[in-house]
Length: 482
Ligand SMILES: *Cc1c(COP(=O)(O)O)cnc(C)c1O
Image (cartoon, rainbow, N blue to C red; front, side):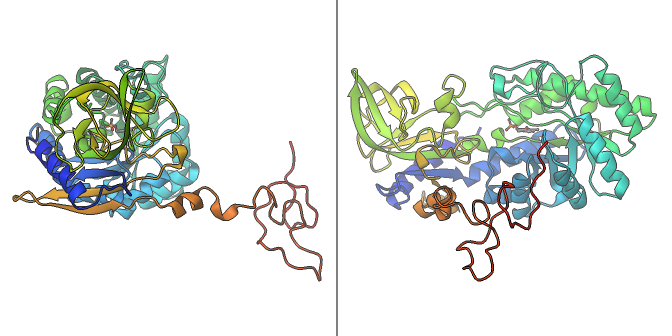
């Protein structure tokens, strides 16, 4: 618990208005509390240091906040990166995170991705036995600095949010350990591959109780012991226990804590921490969620069927999960006046709506709040992970600017841009703006010969990749139809 988090946020809201960060022209911005992120990184590191002397790599799950400056800040705080796509790997590299502190997990790695990861020396957790076969070929082709592991699904059960429960009987991740014959197959897969030295599990995320997460880790630990007994040596030397600490979205309290989870693991899986295993963790949401806040101006207020509604600029584009699944992902809304001071005055049950053109674009429904007025500011806290960094381009609403902030002892607030706001030109360009004719005048090479007969003008555009084999005179061979 960081008792200064809420006072820092109040200062930042006020300063956003005073310094013109939030304005009628830029009616929505996202803020990151730099000090808060550092506090969480330190809390994670010290929670594990308190229960074990084993080396621990805390790898931040990049998907939770895919922003290069955030990754750099975490890197400087001693946190590595867990990546699950070529894009996330590129972000980690752009942030300067070395391969030795990067872990690649994902359920659908291509041969090229695997080859590249092994060439770089990034740790790879295979998702399944087919992927292990692919890695066999790469390992046989030459030495790699990568440490290699396999993900297992301990099938310990679901939490309260189905979509985030990774250890159900039928989850798509990892080798399902309790399926008929699977355990034996996994042990044999290790015995056949002396270079397979890690075991990975990620038992859940938001909505999964700590006890269930610990149970999943316990299953992975027991399997590692079994493999090592069968191998007659400490073949598995590293356990990657995944992430998934749930976040409290109901108040500023940070519960559960990393320290509670580390103590629970120490109590329930004591062998995990006795120094025989190196450890990797992959926390995402719990490192960033509490440190992000969306600020949006109230554009209009109205009543509909007697219900007051504040129409703001924060909606489905920033809080996608909340808008589509409000019961699983409730967010708080804090009311401030037009100058960015906490709004006082009569409260009313009201809806807080976003700017998108569909009826369900509401970030809060029937919420009791001080009655909002046009020009007021709403703050949506706890949005630092999986919210504003995960823009949803509905209605071509722009990605908002993201700004880090720090506060000084005298209350002054300094902002630095983490990601600039998306411009209208960028929106047009990303929507095929320079390919406007693509459907009305197909580029040369599709309906017209790619190489014009001698003496004719060259096509206005360079020929694009051949998509169909209909044109004559093309250098590319026509694709063979099955
Ligand atoms: C998403 C994910 C994480 C991070 O989960 P959080 O709930 O954000 O902590 C860690 N490891 C893997 C493999 C994941 O898919």
